[in-house]
Image 1 (cartoon, helix red, strand yellow):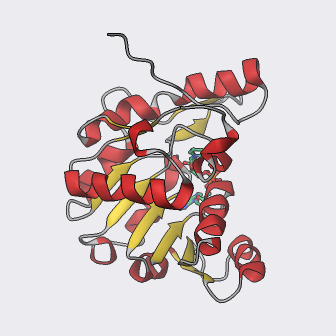
Image 2 (cartoon, rainbow, N blue to C red):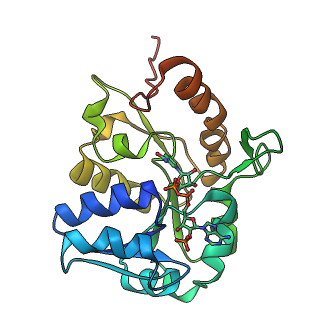
Length: 220
Ligand SMILES: NC(=O)c1ccc[n+]([C@@H]2O[C@H](COP(=O)([O-])OP(=O)(O)OC[C@H]3O[C@@H](n4cnc5c(N)ncnc54)[C@H](OP(=O)(O)O)[C@@H]3O)[C@@H](O)[C@H]2O)c1
């Protein structure tokens, strides 16, 4: 499959590398076609890995991952415009975090809004599925780094798109479909994005490494 991975950070690297290893063709998007980090990512992976602008990568992809810095994702996607995204599934992995004056990471917007919603609203012909944003990028592509059963959350307005994403996450990365919880429409992204302050406190203050995840246990 032809896949666009928008973002040259650790998430774009982890997803892009795994997808190329699986045999997909991946173009990593950036503000500049010759972004050094994208070129370095592509070099050892061979001909199936390429770098391009956000717009050209999206045009190439049959499916698109948004892995840009969440406080800047709208800027990044505005450089793409609606046409390359029309009808495509966009898996929004990003969280709208920004650095506060005291150096801590805070939500750039939340509560009554979310990045998933902003993207869906700005690109109504795109099938936005929020997902993978509540786990570290190494866990995204290798859930067995966390032992036992644990959950992913997805949401979006397009039910067939969510079904397709569940199939991909299962086939590509090994997520058990029964462990992927569909929270409903895209407004549920408010909740999954707001899990970030808790995730960061667990990471920095309690567990000390990023290989952990949430597991929802249902009572009878
Ligand atoms: N780290 C994790 O394990 C993890 C887990 C779950 C979710 N997330 C989320 O995944 C996203 C990616 O995280 P990351 O750490 O891999 O990368 P990042 O450093 O948060 O973002 C890097 C990307 O953002 C783009 N960007 C930055 N400022 C921009 C601007 N003003 N306009 C347009 N694009 C801009 C950069 O473009 P250039 O390439 O042009 O520099 C780059 O491609 C974030 O939203 C993060 O919250 C991260």
